[in-house]
Length: 379
View 1 (spheres, rainbow, N blue to C red):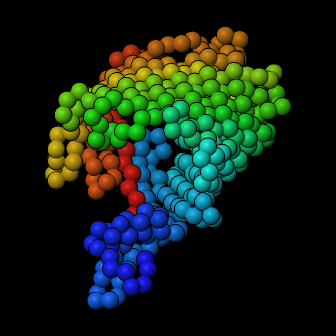
View 2 (view 1 turned 180 degrees about the vertical axis):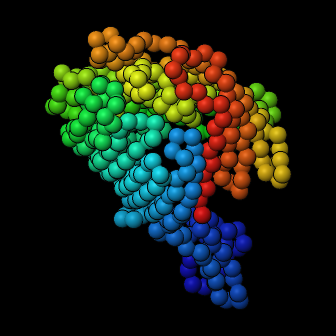
């Protein structure tokens, strides 16, 4: 803009476009008042963020209250967050700082720290985990996101009941060792809520826990989800999750390392309610897999609330122990399956989901769960 210059309406529009394209302003209006050029702009908040309080309920953890804080540009080009959750049987704290520069092809840097304490009444022990991890990340628009991290973890299994499985009693104690992680994820850019073509998401994680210790192990996990529009307002969703633990040291895997199935992860069965069992203790397994097929359809509004109904079928298993107490524990791969129906209400942006499920294939001693409910809301 130069003094004494007459600007056309097209020139003024170009100036407005330039100002909004600078990344500094959310809106700009340039107008001429006589011989005066008036520039009216609205600046973008340079450190946007929020603090929210929430309440959630699910079949695994019951009622959980939460406090969440996040801020962009906490430091230059750095995102930070704190997420604290408090429930009767589960308490957790997670913090994140993530630096993302402006150079194309850059390596971003993140630092995560967290704490988890669980005292589930269906388990004969308490579990506490504290960890800190630094990692590098690279995002490729065509090939997905790559991460590599190095961390330190303290994993404690304590307060074991006197009548607990001999396997759990032998695993009591703490392991404090470094670990490393490698992850890859890729997904389509489409939102499921406005899906007009197939969408997908794939993630693979490889952990090496307890490096240099007798409890060293490799932990490989994969998850895949895909969604297909069948008709207007109707979606077909397919999902698969699986994992494998391989011990790298001389000691057997511990129950706090092994996989558990049930609850929201395997509808029709109680949380941690299937797999190898000794007495009243479900021991988890070194391997797991679970697959689901869901069909969901929007039915418009029910009681002025957007609503979706669906039907699903799931199948999976958790199996494998390094120590079966001389063959006293059956750790074989036994397939379970379930079918059910679901309904989800979008209550002012907070989903309220419930389902009815029936286990169609199960093993003696499994804990089944016919009804599940989950909701989450922030204020």
